[in-house]
Amino acid sequence: MKVGETSVPGVLLVEPDRFGDSRGFFQELWHERRYADAGIAGPFVQDNISLSGRGVLRGLHLQHPQGQGKLVYVLQGEVFDVAVDVRVGSPSFGQWTGAVLSADNARQLWIPEGFAHGFCVLSEAALFAYKCTDFYNRDTELAVLWNDPEIGIDWPLDDPSVSDKDAVAPPLSAIDRGRLPVWVGEA
Image 1 (cartoon, rainbow, N blue to C red):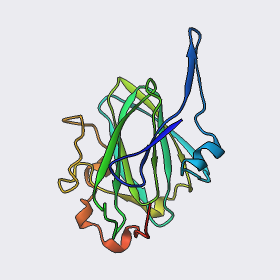
Image 2: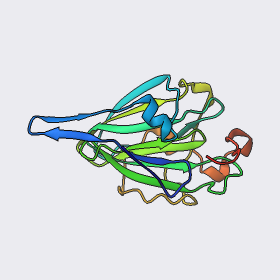
Image 3: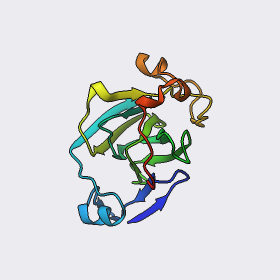
């Protein structure tokens, strides 16, 4: 397994080992000790899965308080996955990083608490899965505008399909800083 830093500290790109032959392949999606040694310790308490068609964009979402670290990956298809640092006081506040995740490349992205997360589907459909370090809580859910010009995410879609809720999410600068997580040092 290879684990590398992205352009935003704390967000990690994971490339699990995959063993294949003419019959197919074998891959571990999660191994507690190996991931803990790489800085992804969990504990994970909830697994989620979503199915979306080409052009769907979901995000940018987070919870605070009761933040969720997320280990995300694609079981079928391909997505462009994004994490945005929204921790007040962080040296990388408002910065984003993105990666193409697919069933073929088997990459995973580790997104710690304090980051907004979103993805868009590049293939005909995508089966997207993620492990979460805390339970979903509607009362602590926050959204940041997916195309916030101050963040400047370079989405690979011109006219994505977004939910009504995501379409009217506020830009990061309009969210009361008291509602956002606070940076407490190294990610």
